[in-house]
Image 1 (cartoon, rainbow, N blue to C red):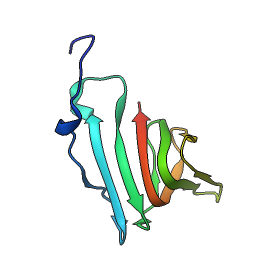
Image 2: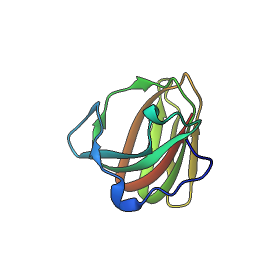
Image 3: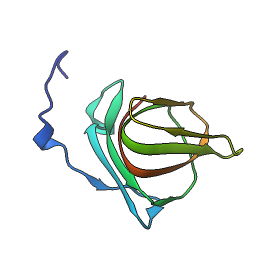
Length: 109
């Protein structure tokens, strides 16, 4: 891997997010797991989808670009972000994602 690269936007492909039903839940990996990168990142779209709870094995930062996007933890803690808000989630947290007309950018490690 080089120390600098440009990833053209037209090469980023959306796919249905696993573990979600109903509504819309898509992710678009920009830097993915198989690339030997320290940080992985991508975009997401979310609207009224039901999400299965999952326990993260990574830290995650989410920047809300449009709409409302939120996270609820296994112990009931809940946050909702709006455009410009950043959500930080720690490794080991059990989460359920939710949103309305949401677009987001995320980074994991």
